[in-house]
Length: 84
Image (cartoon, rainbow, N blue to C red):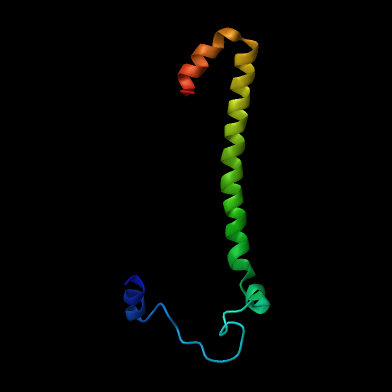
């Protein structure tokens, strides 16, 4: 039923005529070369937006773990504040 509704909209499916790899839904190295910049920049932005917060979180957690290990009396307060 969902596919019928999508097919009725007309904008989603396109008729592709010809014998190129796009028309045959094949692997298109030329398309990849032409659209390379559309995917590389967002990929590196995604990596940056993921690695930086994970690194900051790791640094904070590691610092708190070292503090709790060296000063045993800090285990309770650190656990209480962080909710771990």
